[in-house]
Image (cartoon, rainbow, N blue to C red; front, side, top):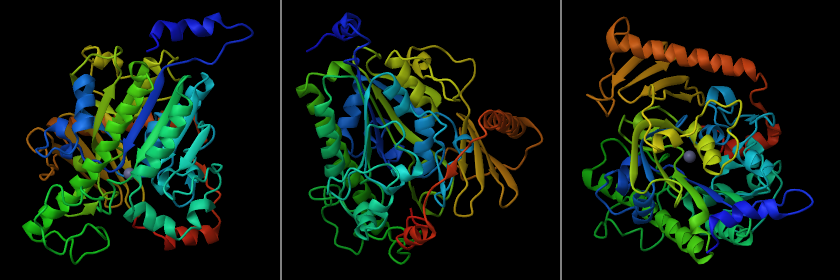
Length: 471
Ligand SMILES: [Zn+2]
């Protein structure tokens, strides 16, 4: 295995300008729709995630990681830009895309001489929404046709009637990891940044064998995991306990199936001899609701089952083994963390901050406040989360409540007293956070830009369920 000091010295030895760095290999894995409480290392009783758990045992597990929202597009835009949704502005899919004025994480690695590759399995990661910025290669892998297309060619998937079915009902991990693996192997001799987006845990819940029966082999009922969001006859709050158990078993099957790819990733890194020079983050963009608050799916609320996500950082020799960060952390902090671990300059113009001080055990002066937002499908929600409480503002209904996350972690008892005590303090924190966001927006007035979707194309997206109530 190549020692790390060699990769540090090699660029210095080159003549005629800096040679591309040979390491490290930075990998960001997003497992779409993965609930924190269905992950083994967060206490789930089923063995859904042995490979993720092993990475956690050898690295750092973050106990209170908070996403910027509860659905795919803005959540990933926040991860890539290290600013909350109000600042990057990509809060809906009906015509906004990330402005090229933002410097994404991939662009920062690219500028440092890294090879950059992104591989995704869900439609909202598409380059048409600006998320391909900075990737040398950015591939929507679902259709299995190995089509590599320019970021502005949204038509490639949108015009294919099979895309929706493939992306929601199909099995996509093989295609996504197959593309990512080939690219990583091709670039194993140089510093690289790889983004891998696994989509199969997202509904529908139709894992391939043996995962379809793995956690509930004896079931013989009507629940097959298909049509989870649209079928209100089979999937409803008062569905039988037995059927509900099977629904969760299918969801868990998708998680177990997806986790096997983390095992493949480890084996590949080891066989290529680069595991010891790899920095790996595994997280999710949001959870999903199984009637926790009467709904199913996500993109409807900002409760913890959809915004509190798993986060594991694995970087042999760079982070302590088996540690747990209990302080609150945020998805906007991931970019600065990866850049610091790769010895690159801290990003300017972002609101996220590196997690390394917390990893190294420093006590923060104050907990990092997380702002979560939802401005889509008629929802106008904003939340301020701290470890012990959440302030929730519903602009559309002109209502404000708060939750005591210590006494009421399930968020079933909204508190309405805002003039004194914790309610007032949470409201003040919320107001303070909004003022910080307003300043950040003022500093970068470009915000989101319009996507180049034609009216015709937009109608097609809607017909296929890409725009509208179905993600
Ligand atoms: Zn998602």
